Amino acid sequence: MAVRLLSKVKVIPELRNAACASSAAAPATLSDFDLQHKTPVIRKQKLIPKAQYGGRHAVTMLPGGGIGPECMGYVREIFKYIGAPVDFEVVDIDPTMDNDEDVQYAITTIKRNGVTTVHKANIMKLSDGLFLETSRRMAKEYPEIEHNDMIIDNCCMQLVARPHQFDVMLMTNLYGSIVSNVVCGILGGAGLLSGRNYGDHYAVFEPGTRNTGTAIAGKNVANPIAMINASIDMLEHLGHHFHADLIRRALNKTVNIDRILTPDVGGTASSTEVVGSIIGNIGKC
Image (tube, rainbow, N blue to C red):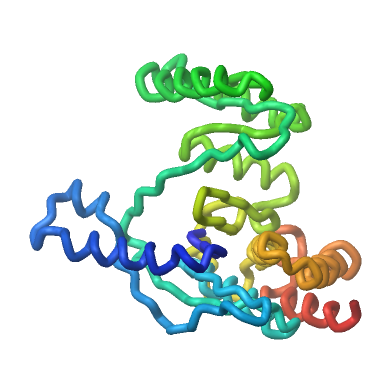
C-alpha cells in the first residue's frame, strides 16, 4: 500500500518542484520505457500551510490506491479525536505510473548484531551477483558490523524455523516484498505490522506489507491496525510520545483484551468497529 508520511517539512517543496520540473521537461511523445520510468504527476488535493509553530508538524499523506484512502481516513479520525499536533497535506499520486526511488541504507548510526544480505546469486549470477558483491565490499568498510549472506530460499525457511537469528536484512525489492509478507504471516497477518523507512531527508511510515487490498476496498473489512501502527511510529519519530503511547495503549486493549478484530485475523468486526473501539478506549486511558 503506497501510504507515505514525510516528516521533514523543508523538503516537501523540493519534492513538488522536482516533480513539476520533471513533468515539464518531458517530451510530448514518450516511448513505453519513458512512460514506465518518468516521475508520476503529483496533484495536491488540499492546501495546508506549513505548521512551524506551537509544536505542530506538517506531514505529507499519500493515500495511494486500494484500501489506502479508507485506512488513512481512520488515522485522521483518531488523530483528530486525540488532538495530535499533526497537520496532513494530502497528495495524490497516479497509481498507474511507476516511480523510481533511490533507497538509502543508513546503518552506520545504529548498533546492530549483524546484517544479512539475502540474494539468489547462485542462479541470478549477474544481477544478484552484483548485489552480493557490492554488499560484501561495503561490509568491509564497516568491520565493526557483522555481515553474512543467505540465499532467499534458505532465508524463508530460516525465518519460519529460527526467526530470532536475524536482525537487519538487506535485500532487493522483490525479495523484500516476499520476506515482509512471510514475517507478517508469522506474527499474525498482513494487517498488523507497520514498516519504517529512513533516508537522509525523508522518513516514511507505512504498513509492513505493500498489498493494496483492491479486492476488499470499500467493503468495511480491511484491517486498519497496520496503518494505525504506522501512525504511532510516525508520532514517535516526530517526538510526540504522549499521543503515540495513548493510541498504542488503546489499540492494545482493543486487540488483546477486548478481542475486537477484523476477519483476516479471526474476528468478526468491521473496520469501523475496530476504529470505534480504539477511539472509545482512548477515552478510558
